[in-house]
Length: 283
Image 1 (cartoon, rainbow, N blue to C red):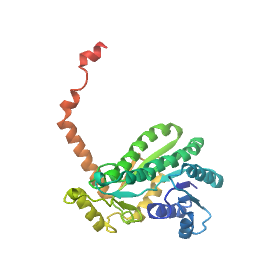
Image 2: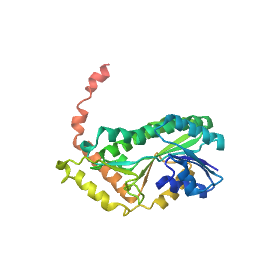
Image 3: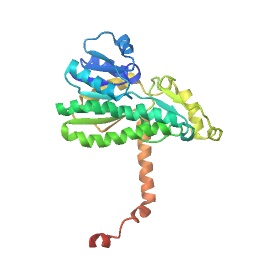
Image 4: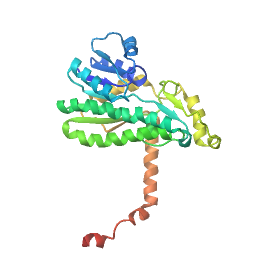
């Protein structure tokens, strides 16, 4: 029996993965700002521990990890799922909106991870799964600030994987595309209220209409992703990156090809900034 620690477990991916983990016979520490919402959804399951956690509160994060250890003795899988979106051009986002988004999506993830890692280090085992997005691999107009939080998660995950691999801990950054969750609902998505007229006829402005039209019409099936996450947790050699969805695969391929073309186009200028080979050899 594995022990999962899942943030944002009351709805969306978090709730679906919680259910799949319980169905698989695993134990779940399901955290939410209001743990009663978890109990109302899943009942008093013997393998479920509902814990209050606002990921922006470091003391709560450490306390939640301690509760998990006290109840189940270990934490095998940390799923950093809590987060939300922000739609709007970079210039349209206010400082308050940006700071609030980073407090949850980046600093909250760091606080929870730092609370759980000491227990995984003690065990010399564990799997940290960080929910990113295709928006954390390639940029999209209208999602610049949100995407930047996910780019941060990708960078953190890459470095963390190198740091904890010698200690028996795996790290996977999960990159979903557009899935038919409530992500585009007002409960999970903030929209910058300050719309700048100059952007209305640009891709950034068009993204506002696109997002509204795509809500609950996304190609990805959240239930299938939840089942896939159990498969991922069972993997002997899990990947550093796990993209989910054909739209994600297409975007990754396009980004990789674009970067490769750009590198070749500007290779000579790039190479021109090194010291001459003879100068390096002389030193």
